[in-house]
Length: 174
Image 1 (cartoon, rainbow, N blue to C red):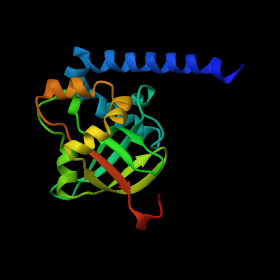
Image 2: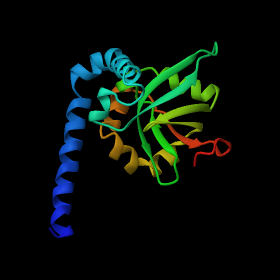
Image 3: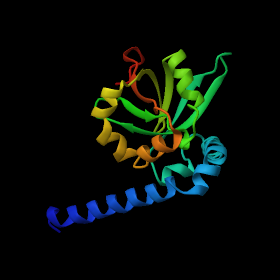
Image 4: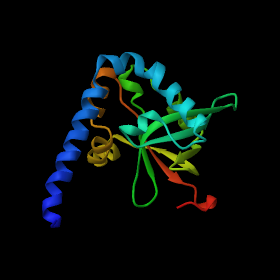
């Protein structure tokens, strides 16, 4: 089959996936129960499968972010993430469209050093909060990864934090 014949099928599949994510992401059920159930279910499956699988990965690229709480105890959070060609990650603190910022984003503001578990590899990273202008520049990428981003922003009534997580050059991951 010629490559030009495969392109429309791939584009149709991407549109279908985006439509599915939008429908699921904007559902009452997900907004109500997602914050309570999905992270727990993902982390349980993640531990039981020795860090190989989470249910949410069936719909989106999911990473586990390891930050530290104020008291120094570890905090693990499954997040929708996107890795670019340079190895940096983009993560959005939508919190399912809830009014408060998620705890992990507060942890990163206090201490930008974290670790992201991505496709079986633990990568030490440094977090950078994007400015509104940088968010505008990354808009296409944000919407590609999270088509419901604008809906969550509207529903939350707050400025949603977006971070770039850059691999720590001293860690050997780039």
